[in-house]
Image (cartoon, rainbow, N blue to C red; front, side, top):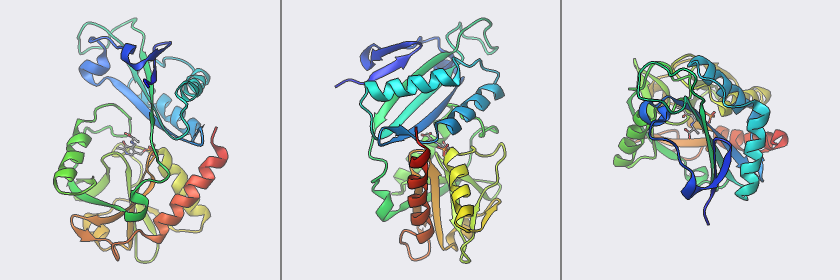
Length: 284
Ligand code: PDD
């Protein structure tokens, strides 16, 4: 059965959902996006994703396609029309279609596209086994805090990981881990302290990151927001990543070195459980 895709005000079968070849998202990666996870037919932290979307749009001087209230109702309609109970909703806003020019076009309306992906995100295979990551240089642009669709560097990173028999890559700049290709990166020191890079233009301010750090503080777990090295990660007790679709994903190996005993760590396991149960309480 074909999905229903939202394109600029219309709900269409995916075969009929089309965007212009002149769309600046296609020509120049002049577009921003959000991924919101769905469990039990409810959106997790819709408000967080909507707020970050507005910020991304502001940072690149792009007009909002509609209000947050309208966005929320489009998300709901997409869940209903696609019978989506578990998985994700992808949203993309581009600057719209115009003759190719580096300068932004004047008087052009932004394009808004949404589609759904049904997926088992709660019972992910990584929950039991954990994932293996490799480290690679971070070759992305300097404004990673803006969630743009420039995803070639992360795609190349995932391919390098796959070629090395790993599941993902952690990106390293000036000797320190920035984040994962599509997630925020964390280590748990031998004393139980969670370490994750502080927010700046170098990383995406993860919506899951914000929630997990809040839950960690509530559970009296010490958190240090600072850069860390791959050497520190290898010597850590545990490691994990967070993202909207992974929640808290345990990492058990970095560059072929086992983290701790090579098993899924207790902190990651606990935070994953807390994250899912607490987020569901406020899901809409
Ligand atoms: N990725 N860092 C990067 C580079 C990301 O692409 C993502 C999310 C995150 C985590 O952000 P959040 O917790 O808000 O999902 C961090 C999404 C899921 C993706 O591209 O599919």
